Image 1 (cartoon, one colour):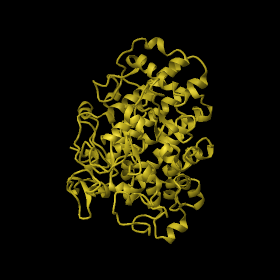
Image 2: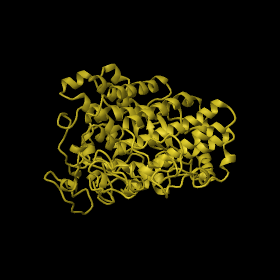
Image 3: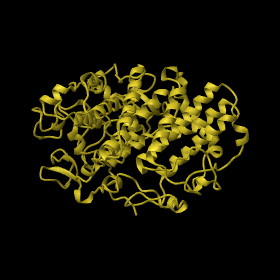
Image 4: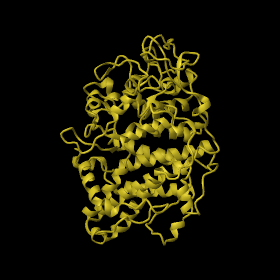
Length: 550
Protein backbone atom coordinates (compact mmCIF):
# COMPACT_ATOMS: atom_id res chain seq x y z
CA UNK A 1 0.00 0.00 0.00
CA UNK A 2 2.79 2.39 0.86
CA UNK A 3 5.56 0.85 -1.23
CA UNK A 4 5.91 4.11 -3.16
CA UNK A 5 7.21 5.78 -0.03
CA UNK A 6 9.97 3.18 0.30
CA UNK A 7 10.81 3.52 -3.37
CA UNK A 8 10.95 7.30 -3.18
CA UNK A 9 13.23 7.16 -0.15
CA UNK A 10 15.72 4.79 -1.79
CA UNK A 11 15.73 6.71 -5.06
CA UNK A 12 16.07 10.03 -3.28
CA UNK A 13 19.19 8.82 -1.46
CA UNK A 14 20.65 7.42 -4.65
CA UNK A 15 20.00 10.56 -6.64
CA UNK A 16 20.70 13.21 -4.03
CA UNK A 17 24.23 13.90 -5.22
CA UNK A 18 23.30 13.74 -8.88
CA UNK A 19 20.22 15.90 -9.28
CA UNK A 20 19.96 17.97 -6.11
CA UNK A 21 21.17 21.53 -6.25
CA UNK A 22 23.89 23.56 -4.72
CA UNK A 23 21.84 26.17 -2.86
CA UNK A 24 24.78 27.84 -1.16
CA UNK A 25 26.30 29.91 -3.92
CA UNK A 26 23.76 32.10 -5.69
CA UNK A 27 20.37 33.64 -5.19
CA UNK A 28 18.53 31.26 -7.55
CA UNK A 29 19.50 27.60 -7.85
CA UNK A 30 20.97 27.05 -11.27
CA UNK A 31 23.28 24.04 -11.47
CA UNK A 32 23.48 20.59 -9.95
CA UNK A 33 25.98 20.13 -7.14
CA UNK A 34 27.42 17.20 -9.03
CA UNK A 35 27.05 16.00 -12.59
CA UNK A 36 28.36 12.53 -11.74
CA UNK A 37 26.88 10.05 -14.23
CA UNK A 38 24.40 12.66 -15.48
CA UNK A 39 25.41 12.03 -19.07
CA UNK A 40 24.60 8.34 -18.69
CA UNK A 41 21.52 8.69 -16.54
CA UNK A 42 18.67 9.97 -18.70
CA UNK A 43 18.24 6.90 -20.88
CA UNK A 44 14.96 5.16 -20.10
CA UNK A 45 11.63 5.70 -18.41
CA UNK A 46 12.85 4.10 -15.18
CA UNK A 47 15.54 6.80 -14.94
CA UNK A 48 12.87 9.42 -15.49
CA UNK A 49 10.70 7.89 -12.78
CA UNK A 50 13.59 7.85 -10.32
CA UNK A 51 14.25 11.52 -11.01
CA UNK A 52 10.58 12.38 -10.58
CA UNK A 53 10.51 10.59 -7.23
CA UNK A 54 12.71 13.35 -5.79
CA UNK A 55 9.86 15.85 -6.21
CA UNK A 56 7.73 14.01 -3.66
CA UNK A 57 10.03 15.10 -0.85
CA UNK A 58 8.49 18.57 -1.30
CA UNK A 59 4.93 17.54 -0.44
CA UNK A 60 4.21 19.22 2.93
CA UNK A 61 4.86 17.10 6.00
CA UNK A 62 2.27 16.69 8.72
CA UNK A 63 4.35 18.98 10.95
CA UNK A 64 3.55 21.79 8.52
CA UNK A 65 0.21 21.96 10.32
CA UNK A 66 2.08 24.16 12.80
CA UNK A 67 1.36 26.94 10.33
CA UNK A 68 -2.09 27.24 11.89
CA UNK A 69 -0.21 29.57 14.24
CA UNK A 70 0.20 32.05 11.41
CA UNK A 71 -3.46 32.91 11.88
CA UNK A 72 -5.86 33.62 14.74
CA UNK A 73 -6.80 29.93 15.03
CA UNK A 74 -3.68 28.65 16.76
CA UNK A 75 -1.01 29.53 19.28
CA UNK A 76 1.99 27.35 20.16
CA UNK A 77 3.33 26.48 23.57
CA UNK A 78 6.68 27.85 22.35
CA UNK A 79 5.21 31.35 22.28
CA UNK A 80 4.10 34.00 19.76
CA UNK A 81 4.43 33.51 16.03
CA UNK A 82 6.19 36.38 14.29
CA UNK A 83 4.04 36.09 11.15
CA UNK A 84 0.82 36.11 13.16
CA UNK A 85 1.71 39.02 15.41
CA UNK A 86 3.53 41.11 12.80
CA UNK A 87 6.92 41.17 14.53
CA UNK A 88 9.01 39.42 11.87
CA UNK A 89 11.89 41.18 10.16
CA UNK A 90 13.52 40.84 6.75
CA UNK A 91 15.47 37.54 6.74
CA UNK A 92 18.97 37.08 5.39
CA UNK A 93 17.91 33.79 3.81
CA UNK A 94 14.56 32.10 3.33
CA UNK A 95 13.75 28.46 2.61
CA UNK A 96 10.38 29.64 1.34
CA UNK A 97 12.36 31.28 -1.46
CA UNK A 98 15.35 28.98 -2.01
CA UNK A 99 13.64 25.60 -1.58
CA UNK A 100 10.93 26.45 -4.08
CA UNK A 101 13.52 27.51 -6.63
CA UNK A 102 15.47 24.33 -5.91
CA UNK A 103 12.34 22.35 -6.76
CA UNK A 104 11.78 24.45 -9.88
CA UNK A 105 15.31 23.78 -11.08
CA UNK A 106 14.87 20.04 -10.71
CA UNK A 107 11.55 20.17 -12.54
CA UNK A 108 13.14 22.15 -15.38
CA UNK A 109 16.04 19.69 -15.44
CA UNK A 110 13.75 16.69 -15.89
CA UNK A 111 11.70 18.42 -18.56
CA UNK A 112 14.83 19.27 -20.53
CA UNK A 113 16.56 15.91 -20.09
CA UNK A 114 13.42 13.96 -20.99
CA UNK A 115 14.23 14.44 -24.69
CA UNK A 116 17.10 11.97 -24.23
CA UNK A 117 14.85 9.25 -22.87
CA UNK A 118 13.90 6.33 -25.07
CA UNK A 119 10.76 4.33 -24.44
CA UNK A 120 6.99 4.60 -24.11
CA UNK A 121 6.12 8.20 -24.95
CA UNK A 122 2.97 8.06 -22.82
CA UNK A 123 5.09 7.13 -19.81
CA UNK A 124 7.62 9.83 -20.63
CA UNK A 125 4.82 12.39 -20.78
CA UNK A 126 3.50 11.15 -17.44
CA UNK A 127 6.74 11.95 -15.65
CA UNK A 128 7.02 15.25 -17.50
CA UNK A 129 3.51 15.93 -16.19
CA UNK A 130 4.66 15.21 -12.64
CA UNK A 131 7.48 17.72 -13.15
CA UNK A 132 4.97 20.26 -14.48
CA UNK A 133 2.71 19.68 -11.47
CA UNK A 134 5.51 20.26 -8.97
CA UNK A 135 6.80 23.31 -10.85
CA UNK A 136 3.29 24.79 -10.62
CA UNK A 137 3.17 23.84 -6.95
CA UNK A 138 6.46 25.63 -6.28
CA UNK A 139 5.44 28.77 -8.17
CA UNK A 140 2.11 28.90 -6.35
CA UNK A 141 4.03 28.89 -3.06
CA UNK A 142 6.21 31.73 -4.31
CA UNK A 143 3.51 34.05 -5.70
CA UNK A 144 1.34 33.67 -2.59
CA UNK A 145 4.21 34.91 -0.47
CA UNK A 146 6.20 37.29 -2.63
CA UNK A 147 3.89 38.44 -5.44
CA UNK A 148 5.95 39.09 -8.57
CA UNK A 149 8.78 36.54 -8.72
CA UNK A 150 11.29 35.52 -11.41
CA UNK A 151 9.70 33.04 -13.81
CA UNK A 152 12.38 30.50 -14.71
CA UNK A 153 11.29 27.83 -17.18
CA UNK A 154 14.70 26.41 -18.09
CA UNK A 155 17.96 25.52 -16.39
CA UNK A 156 20.86 27.93 -16.44
CA UNK A 157 24.28 28.49 -14.89
CA UNK A 158 26.18 31.46 -13.49
CA UNK A 159 27.19 32.74 -16.93
CA UNK A 160 23.60 32.96 -18.18
CA UNK A 161 21.66 36.22 -18.44
CA UNK A 162 19.05 34.65 -16.14
CA UNK A 163 21.65 34.96 -13.41
CA UNK A 164 20.46 38.56 -12.98
CA UNK A 165 16.80 37.96 -13.71
CA UNK A 166 14.10 40.53 -12.98
CA UNK A 167 10.87 39.79 -11.17
CA UNK A 168 8.06 38.65 -13.49
CA UNK A 169 4.55 40.08 -13.24
CA UNK A 170 2.37 37.92 -11.00
CA UNK A 171 -0.26 37.32 -13.67
CA UNK A 172 2.37 36.00 -16.09
CA UNK A 173 3.56 33.56 -13.45
CA UNK A 174 0.00 32.47 -12.66
CA UNK A 175 -0.73 31.92 -16.35
CA UNK A 176 2.39 29.72 -16.53
CA UNK A 177 1.07 27.79 -13.51
CA UNK A 178 -2.23 27.16 -15.28
CA UNK A 179 -0.37 25.99 -18.41
CA UNK A 180 1.72 23.56 -16.39
CA UNK A 181 -1.33 22.18 -14.63
CA UNK A 182 -3.25 21.79 -17.90
CA UNK A 183 -0.37 19.69 -19.23
CA UNK A 184 -0.37 17.69 -16.02
CA UNK A 185 -4.13 17.06 -16.18
CA UNK A 186 -3.86 15.86 -19.77
CA UNK A 187 -0.97 13.46 -19.15
CA UNK A 188 -1.42 12.12 -15.63
CA UNK A 189 -3.47 9.02 -14.85
CA UNK A 190 -6.75 9.18 -12.97
CA UNK A 191 -6.67 7.85 -9.41
CA UNK A 192 -8.73 4.86 -10.56
CA UNK A 193 -5.90 3.87 -12.93
CA UNK A 194 -3.24 3.73 -10.21
CA UNK A 195 -2.24 0.29 -8.96
CA UNK A 196 -2.12 -0.02 -5.18
CA UNK A 197 1.68 -0.01 -5.27
CA UNK A 198 1.62 3.46 -6.84
CA UNK A 199 -0.79 5.04 -4.38
CA UNK A 200 0.54 8.50 -3.57
CA UNK A 201 1.73 9.39 -7.05
CA UNK A 202 0.29 12.53 -8.60
CA UNK A 203 -2.95 12.05 -10.53
CA UNK A 204 -5.00 14.17 -12.89
CA UNK A 205 -7.43 14.76 -9.99
CA UNK A 206 -4.62 16.18 -7.86
CA UNK A 207 -3.61 18.53 -10.68
CA UNK A 208 -7.18 19.72 -11.15
CA UNK A 209 -7.60 20.22 -7.40
CA UNK A 210 -4.39 22.24 -7.14
CA UNK A 211 -5.54 24.35 -10.09
CA UNK A 212 -8.86 24.99 -8.34
CA UNK A 213 -7.09 25.99 -5.12
CA UNK A 214 -4.72 28.39 -6.87
CA UNK A 215 -7.46 29.92 -9.03
CA UNK A 216 -9.69 30.56 -6.00
CA UNK A 217 -6.79 32.27 -4.23
CA UNK A 218 -5.94 34.45 -7.22
CA UNK A 219 -9.55 35.29 -8.04
CA UNK A 220 -10.55 36.33 -4.54
CA UNK A 221 -7.26 38.19 -4.07
CA UNK A 222 -8.07 40.26 -7.14
CA UNK A 223 -11.65 40.81 -6.00
CA UNK A 224 -10.98 41.95 -2.45
CA UNK A 225 -7.69 43.74 -3.06
CA UNK A 226 -8.98 45.49 -6.19
CA UNK A 227 -6.16 44.18 -8.38
CA UNK A 228 -7.81 43.17 -11.61
CA UNK A 229 -10.77 41.23 -12.94
CA UNK A 230 -11.38 38.12 -10.82
CA UNK A 231 -13.85 36.49 -13.21
CA UNK A 232 -11.31 34.47 -15.19
CA UNK A 233 -9.66 32.93 -12.13
CA UNK A 234 -12.94 32.29 -10.33
CA UNK A 235 -14.30 30.62 -13.47
CA UNK A 236 -11.21 28.43 -13.63
CA UNK A 237 -11.72 27.48 -9.97
CA UNK A 238 -15.36 26.51 -10.59
CA UNK A 239 -14.56 24.48 -13.71
CA UNK A 240 -11.59 22.64 -12.17
CA UNK A 241 -13.44 21.83 -8.95
CA UNK A 242 -16.57 20.75 -10.83
CA UNK A 243 -14.52 18.46 -13.06
CA UNK A 244 -13.15 16.71 -9.97
CA UNK A 245 -16.66 16.47 -8.51
CA UNK A 246 -18.13 15.00 -11.70
CA UNK A 247 -15.34 12.45 -12.06
CA UNK A 248 -16.97 10.25 -9.43
CA UNK A 249 -13.53 9.22 -8.17
CA UNK A 250 -13.65 11.03 -4.84
CA UNK A 251 -16.10 11.20 -1.98
CA UNK A 252 -16.46 12.35 1.61
CA UNK A 253 -14.86 9.77 3.91
CA UNK A 254 -17.28 7.69 5.97
CA UNK A 255 -16.03 5.34 8.66
CA UNK A 256 -18.52 2.51 8.59
CA UNK A 257 -17.56 1.18 12.04
CA UNK A 258 -18.42 4.51 13.68
CA UNK A 259 -20.19 6.69 11.10
CA UNK A 260 -21.10 9.44 13.56
CA UNK A 261 -17.39 9.91 14.26
CA UNK A 262 -16.25 9.79 10.64
CA UNK A 263 -14.68 13.25 10.82
CA UNK A 264 -12.48 12.17 13.75
CA UNK A 265 -11.42 8.93 12.04
CA UNK A 266 -10.60 10.81 8.85
CA UNK A 267 -7.36 11.81 10.63
CA UNK A 268 -6.64 8.39 12.11
CA UNK A 269 -5.19 5.11 10.75
CA UNK A 270 -8.75 4.16 9.70
CA UNK A 271 -8.45 6.61 6.80
CA UNK A 272 -5.49 4.93 5.12
CA UNK A 273 -5.69 3.95 1.47
CA UNK A 274 -7.38 2.41 -0.35
CA UNK A 275 -10.47 3.04 1.80
CA UNK A 276 -10.13 6.83 1.83
CA UNK A 277 -11.56 8.33 -1.35
CA UNK A 278 -11.34 11.80 0.19
CA UNK A 279 -7.53 11.92 -0.01
CA UNK A 280 -6.44 13.56 -3.27
CA UNK A 281 -2.83 14.56 -2.57
CA UNK A 282 -1.04 12.98 0.37
CA UNK A 283 2.34 12.95 2.03
CA UNK A 284 2.91 9.24 2.61
CA UNK A 285 4.44 7.81 5.75
CA UNK A 286 5.35 4.25 6.74
CA UNK A 287 3.06 1.36 7.47
CA UNK A 288 3.73 0.26 11.07
CA UNK A 289 6.37 -0.17 13.74
CA UNK A 290 7.28 -3.41 11.99
CA UNK A 291 7.91 -1.50 8.76
CA UNK A 292 9.05 1.99 9.78
CA UNK A 293 9.98 3.37 6.36
CA UNK A 294 9.05 6.87 7.52
CA UNK A 295 7.02 8.17 10.41
CA UNK A 296 6.20 11.32 12.31
CA UNK A 297 5.64 12.27 15.93
CA UNK A 298 2.70 14.61 15.45
CA UNK A 299 0.40 13.19 18.17
CA UNK A 300 3.12 13.64 20.80
CA UNK A 301 3.79 17.16 19.52
CA UNK A 302 0.10 17.96 19.84
CA UNK A 303 0.14 16.62 23.40
CA UNK A 304 3.09 18.87 24.20
CA UNK A 305 1.43 21.87 22.57
CA UNK A 306 4.66 22.45 20.68
CA UNK A 307 2.81 22.43 17.37
CA UNK A 308 -0.38 24.39 18.01
CA UNK A 309 -3.19 24.91 20.51
CA UNK A 310 -6.64 26.18 19.45
CA UNK A 311 -7.81 29.69 20.34
CA UNK A 312 -11.14 31.05 21.54
CA UNK A 313 -11.57 32.71 18.15
CA UNK A 314 -11.62 29.30 16.49
CA UNK A 315 -13.94 27.83 19.12
CA UNK A 316 -16.39 30.71 18.72
CA UNK A 317 -16.68 30.00 15.00
CA UNK A 318 -18.43 26.65 15.50
CA UNK A 319 -22.19 26.65 14.96
CA UNK A 320 -24.76 25.19 17.29
CA UNK A 321 -26.61 22.06 16.21
CA UNK A 322 -29.52 24.18 14.95
CA UNK A 323 -27.14 25.67 12.36
CA UNK A 324 -27.01 29.08 14.05
CA UNK A 325 -23.90 30.88 15.32
CA UNK A 326 -23.15 32.41 18.70
CA UNK A 327 -25.41 35.35 19.41
CA UNK A 328 -28.27 33.90 17.38
CA UNK A 329 -28.85 30.37 18.61
CA UNK A 330 -31.27 29.75 21.51
CA UNK A 331 -29.12 26.72 22.33
CA UNK A 332 -26.29 28.94 23.54
CA UNK A 333 -25.69 28.78 27.30
CA UNK A 334 -23.63 30.74 29.77
CA UNK A 335 -20.45 28.81 30.41
CA UNK A 336 -20.44 27.26 33.89
CA UNK A 337 -17.89 24.51 33.18
CA UNK A 338 -15.34 23.81 30.46
CA UNK A 339 -17.87 21.44 28.89
CA UNK A 340 -20.60 24.04 28.41
CA UNK A 341 -19.13 25.41 25.20
CA UNK A 342 -19.22 21.93 23.63
CA UNK A 343 -22.92 21.38 24.36
CA UNK A 344 -25.21 21.40 21.33
CA UNK A 345 -22.33 22.42 19.06
CA UNK A 346 -21.22 21.21 15.65
CA UNK A 347 -19.76 17.74 16.41
CA UNK A 348 -16.58 18.71 14.58
CA UNK A 349 -15.71 20.93 17.53
CA UNK A 350 -15.33 17.91 19.80
CA UNK A 351 -13.55 15.97 17.07
CA UNK A 352 -11.02 18.78 16.63
CA UNK A 353 -10.49 19.93 20.24
CA UNK A 354 -10.23 17.86 23.43
CA UNK A 355 -12.75 18.05 26.26
CA UNK A 356 -13.37 16.07 29.44
CA UNK A 357 -15.45 13.40 27.69
CA UNK A 358 -12.44 12.26 25.63
CA UNK A 359 -9.93 9.64 26.69
CA UNK A 360 -6.41 11.05 26.71
CA UNK A 361 -3.40 8.70 27.10
CA UNK A 362 -4.22 7.05 30.46
CA UNK A 363 -7.39 8.75 31.65
CA UNK A 364 -10.07 11.18 30.58
CA UNK A 365 -8.81 14.57 29.47
CA UNK A 366 -8.48 17.27 32.11
CA UNK A 367 -8.34 20.97 31.24
CA UNK A 368 -4.79 22.20 31.54
CA UNK A 369 -2.45 25.08 30.94
CA UNK A 370 0.54 22.74 30.99
CA UNK A 371 1.87 22.76 27.43
CA UNK A 372 -1.39 24.46 26.45
CA UNK A 373 -1.21 28.27 26.66
CA UNK A 374 -4.79 28.65 25.42
CA UNK A 375 -6.17 25.98 27.75
CA UNK A 376 -7.12 23.86 24.72
CA UNK A 377 -5.42 20.95 22.98
CA UNK A 378 -5.90 19.63 19.45
CA UNK A 379 -7.64 16.27 19.14
CA UNK A 380 -7.56 16.11 15.33
CA UNK A 381 -4.73 13.69 14.36
CA UNK A 382 -4.21 12.66 18.02
CA UNK A 383 -4.44 9.08 19.23
CA UNK A 384 -3.12 7.44 22.38
CA UNK A 385 -1.31 4.53 20.72
CA UNK A 386 0.81 6.81 18.53
CA UNK A 387 1.35 9.26 21.40
CA UNK A 388 2.83 6.52 23.60
CA UNK A 389 4.85 4.97 20.77
CA UNK A 390 6.17 8.40 19.72
CA UNK A 391 5.59 7.23 16.15
CA UNK A 392 2.66 7.72 13.83
CA UNK A 393 2.15 6.61 10.25
CA UNK A 394 -0.98 8.58 9.42
CA UNK A 395 -0.62 10.30 6.05
CA UNK A 396 -0.83 14.07 5.70
CA UNK A 397 -3.68 14.98 3.36
CA UNK A 398 -2.32 18.03 1.55
CA UNK A 399 -5.48 18.24 -0.56
CA UNK A 400 -8.69 16.42 0.30
CA UNK A 401 -12.04 16.29 -1.43
CA UNK A 402 -13.83 18.38 1.20
CA UNK A 403 -11.57 21.30 0.25
CA UNK A 404 -12.53 20.90 -3.42
CA UNK A 405 -16.22 21.13 -2.45
CA UNK A 406 -15.49 24.25 -0.39
CA UNK A 407 -13.57 25.78 -3.29
CA UNK A 408 -16.50 25.12 -5.62
CA UNK A 409 -19.04 26.73 -3.28
CA UNK A 410 -16.95 29.83 -2.59
CA UNK A 411 -15.92 30.36 -6.22
CA UNK A 412 -19.54 29.95 -7.36
CA UNK A 413 -20.72 32.52 -4.85
CA UNK A 414 -17.96 35.04 -5.53
CA UNK A 415 -18.30 34.69 -9.28
CA UNK A 416 -22.03 35.40 -9.40
CA UNK A 417 -22.78 37.01 -6.05
CA UNK A 418 -25.08 34.15 -5.08
CA UNK A 419 -25.22 30.38 -4.94
CA UNK A 420 -28.17 28.08 -5.57
CA UNK A 421 -29.42 25.50 -3.11
CA UNK A 422 -28.57 22.87 -5.69
CA UNK A 423 -24.93 23.97 -5.71
CA UNK A 424 -24.90 24.04 -1.90
CA UNK A 425 -26.30 20.51 -1.82
CA UNK A 426 -23.56 19.12 -4.02
CA UNK A 427 -20.79 20.89 -2.12
CA UNK A 428 -21.04 22.27 1.41
CA UNK A 429 -24.04 20.19 2.43
CA UNK A 430 -22.17 16.96 1.66
CA UNK A 431 -19.62 18.06 4.24
CA UNK A 432 -22.30 19.07 6.73
CA UNK A 433 -24.07 15.77 6.27
CA UNK A 434 -21.01 13.89 7.54
CA UNK A 435 -20.97 16.15 10.60
CA UNK A 436 -24.73 15.62 11.17
CA UNK A 437 -25.32 19.36 10.78
CA UNK A 438 -28.38 21.02 9.18
CA UNK A 439 -28.14 21.86 5.50
CA UNK A 440 -27.22 25.39 4.50
CA UNK A 441 -29.92 26.94 2.30
CA UNK A 442 -30.73 30.40 1.00
CA UNK A 443 -34.01 30.39 2.92
CA UNK A 444 -32.24 29.53 6.18
CA UNK A 445 -29.76 32.35 5.66
CA UNK A 446 -32.49 34.89 4.88
CA UNK A 447 -34.86 33.81 7.67
CA UNK A 448 -32.15 34.00 10.33
CA UNK A 449 -30.47 37.21 9.18
CA UNK A 450 -27.23 35.49 8.22
CA UNK A 451 -24.80 36.34 5.44
CA UNK A 452 -24.13 33.61 2.86
CA UNK A 453 -20.53 34.68 2.28
CA UNK A 454 -19.79 34.51 6.00
CA UNK A 455 -21.39 31.07 6.29
CA UNK A 456 -19.39 29.70 3.36
CA UNK A 457 -16.24 31.09 4.92
CA UNK A 458 -17.19 29.72 8.33
CA UNK A 459 -17.68 26.24 6.90
CA UNK A 460 -14.22 26.37 5.37
CA UNK A 461 -12.67 27.54 8.63
CA UNK A 462 -14.09 24.81 10.85
CA UNK A 463 -13.75 21.95 8.35
CA UNK A 464 -10.07 22.70 7.65
CA UNK A 465 -9.14 23.92 11.15
CA UNK A 466 -5.54 23.32 12.26
CA UNK A 467 -4.70 21.50 9.03
CA UNK A 468 -1.97 23.90 8.06
CA UNK A 469 -1.98 27.30 6.42
CA UNK A 470 -5.57 27.51 5.17
CA UNK A 471 -6.85 30.11 7.60
CA UNK A 472 -3.84 32.43 7.18
CA UNK A 473 -4.03 32.47 3.40
CA UNK A 474 -7.80 32.95 3.58
CA UNK A 475 -7.32 36.08 5.67
CA UNK A 476 -4.73 37.29 3.17
CA UNK A 477 -6.86 36.78 0.06
CA UNK A 478 -10.05 38.12 1.68
CA UNK A 479 -8.12 41.22 2.86
CA UNK A 480 -9.33 40.65 6.40
CA UNK A 481 -5.92 39.93 7.92
CA UNK A 482 -5.60 43.61 8.85
CA UNK A 483 -8.78 43.25 10.94
CA UNK A 484 -8.39 39.78 12.45
CA UNK A 485 -4.69 39.34 13.13
CA UNK A 486 -4.17 42.44 15.34
CA UNK A 487 -6.85 41.27 17.78
CA UNK A 488 -5.81 39.91 21.16
CA UNK A 489 -5.51 36.15 21.42
CA UNK A 490 -7.81 34.59 23.99
CA UNK A 491 -8.02 31.03 25.25
CA UNK A 492 -10.56 29.07 27.24
CA UNK A 493 -12.68 30.45 30.04
CA UNK A 494 -10.74 29.74 33.23
CA UNK A 495 -12.47 27.70 35.91
CA UNK A 496 -10.13 27.45 38.88
CA UNK A 497 -11.80 24.28 40.14
CA UNK A 498 -11.10 22.46 36.85
CA UNK A 499 -7.65 23.63 35.86
CA UNK A 500 -4.54 22.73 37.83
CA UNK A 501 -3.30 25.43 40.18
CA UNK A 502 -2.52 28.37 37.97
CA UNK A 503 -2.97 32.13 37.87
CA UNK A 504 -3.30 33.11 34.21
CA UNK A 505 -4.07 36.65 33.18
CA UNK A 506 -7.80 36.92 32.43
CA UNK A 507 -10.04 39.38 30.63
CA UNK A 508 -13.19 40.83 32.19
CA UNK A 509 -15.24 37.74 31.24
CA UNK A 510 -12.71 35.32 32.69
CA UNK A 511 -11.07 34.16 29.45
CA UNK A 512 -7.34 33.48 29.40
CA UNK A 513 -5.35 36.28 27.77
CA UNK A 514 -2.72 34.56 25.66
CA UNK A 515 -1.33 37.58 23.80
CA UNK A 516 -2.36 41.19 24.25
CA UNK A 517 -3.59 43.17 21.26
CA UNK A 518 -0.86 45.72 22.00
CA UNK A 519 1.71 43.08 21.05
CA UNK A 520 0.06 42.26 17.73
CA UNK A 521 0.00 44.30 14.55
CA UNK A 522 -0.58 43.99 10.81
CA UNK A 523 0.51 46.68 8.39
CA UNK A 524 -1.82 46.46 5.34
CA UNK A 525 0.69 48.41 3.25
CA UNK A 526 3.39 45.81 3.95
CA UNK A 527 2.23 42.51 5.39
CA UNK A 528 0.07 41.16 2.58
CA UNK A 529 3.38 40.26 0.90
CA UNK A 530 6.44 38.67 2.45
CA UNK A 531 9.96 40.16 2.36
CA UNK A 532 12.55 38.83 -0.05
CA UNK A 533 15.73 37.62 1.68
CA UNK A 534 18.54 40.16 1.74
CA UNK A 535 21.17 37.68 0.55
CA UNK A 536 19.31 37.15 -2.70
CA UNK A 537 18.76 40.88 -3.17
CA UNK A 538 22.48 41.42 -2.74
CA UNK A 539 23.43 38.72 -5.25
CA UNK A 540 20.96 39.90 -7.88
CA UNK A 541 20.69 43.67 -8.11
CA UNK A 542 17.76 43.37 -10.52
CA UNK A 543 15.59 41.98 -7.73
CA UNK A 544 13.62 44.52 -5.74
CA UNK A 545 12.25 44.32 -2.21
CA UNK A 546 8.52 44.28 -1.52
CA UNK A 547 7.04 47.60 -0.34
CA UNK A 548 7.93 48.84 3.16
CA UNK A 549 10.15 45.87 3.96
CA UNK A 550 13.45 47.51 4.80
